Amino acid sequence: MRRDELTESRDNVTLTRREMIKVSIGVAAGSLLTRPAGAGEIDNMTDIGMEAAIIFDPHIPEALRQALEYAGDDGFVASLPALLHARATANYDSIMWNTWFTANTEESVVTTLQGNHVVVAVHGGGIFASPARFERVYRATVDRSSPEGFTGQYAAKITRQEARDVLAGRLPDGTEIPVYPFEEFRRGIANLPLRYGVILDYELARNSSNARVPFEDLKDDPTMIVRAGGVEANAVYLDKYQARHNTRVSGNWNPFNRIDPDQPQTRVLYLGGNRGAMDSEGSPLWLGYDSEYGIGGDPSMMGLARYVAVAPPNSATNFQYTDIEL
Image (cartoon, rainbow, N blue to C red; front, side, top):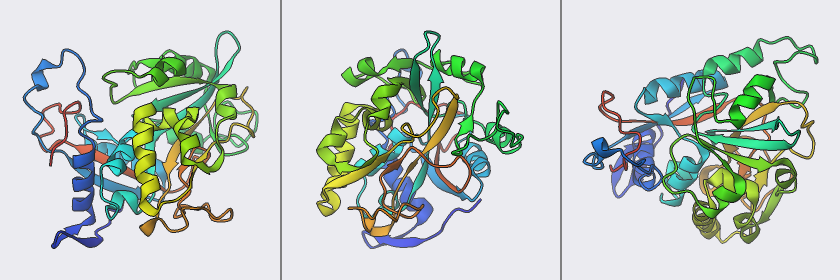
């Protein structure tokens, strides 16, 4: 694990990178972490601060293991909606805007009992919520007929049972989450939890943007709405992103036109970024980790990872649904 200690001046105070991430996540995540109905035991805890750290490692499962360890039972590893919300409320000189991140969000291509192909997006940890599940992929046979391992385009194969379970909101760690049809999600869901899923018709996902496209188009793009956590959250993030350099376009990428949807498979999502948002208008040949490519839904399931882990200062108390104030 590496926790970068880059320092930067903010309001004449020198902050370490960890302290900067604490500021940006702490201020930004308050309205994202809605309190579920009936959570009266945390009504008086909204002034409790949360601490966050950037966890980087060249091996995805090791980065996730360290992030989960930092978050503990009462914290969380940031999903894509959490990362985008943190950006939307952070200053442009925040580390949130000046590097790339791995999101604790995944998209699985599965087939319903009726034979329809769909994409199930899970925010906050889904089938690949544990490092051990990644390791199973890495250690599987390379035989193409193997039910586990990598697809030919380096997504992770999932079992038919995992595919059926995620459709029903059942996850391998025993958690049951709400799963919303896209049209219902698009209309808006009050008090979204940290972990939830959205089911999107495969053809709708396949015909969504897979390029750098105008911001106004992205506001209406089905995959972008799902990835951002809803219509309103999507618009807020895109407006903030566009205003940074008055750019015209942003990237939103997916693999759905080049994969076999009959093979159940999963990918985690990445959020692009570099210092100063260089080349945010796009270069067709520059799509590496440090490029300003937007949101990547088609990365390999092996490689580098940079997660954001968030934890309460007192891990004995459950604050995962409180507003974060620093």
